[in-house]
Length: 167
Image (tube, rainbow, N blue to C red; front, side):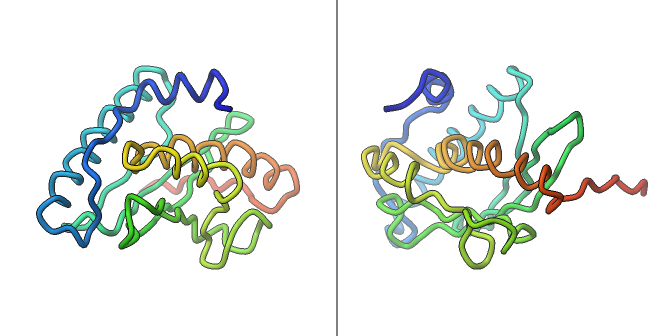
């Protein structure tokens, strides 16, 4: 059910081992370390493949994540704020990734700018607990969502290109 491109992407992201969420005090630190290692390896792979498309950081506890993601379309870079919280039932429940500035601009989004991942990504996540983590959510959730939705929103004139202001 996973296409060749997705398999190639998955092969660049280490699978996680620790089944722990924010409530599991002792194991959460171990899981968080695995999450960071997986994210770092995925970002390094993306840079080597000339496919760098996001930056993430977290709060001290690793329960709130934020950063930027971008999509290149017609040689223009469209950049968006990205944010999500780690659910208390993580890793059984995938994070709900949000792009707040796109809230209400597409039907494939929930209130607060949370992108719709229910049909394709969440069943895949469920079959891969606890092996999938934040890097997998970015690669198999947000990445494909951006690839489908952003060009459509641009073509419809809903998203406009913004020049970077020089500071």
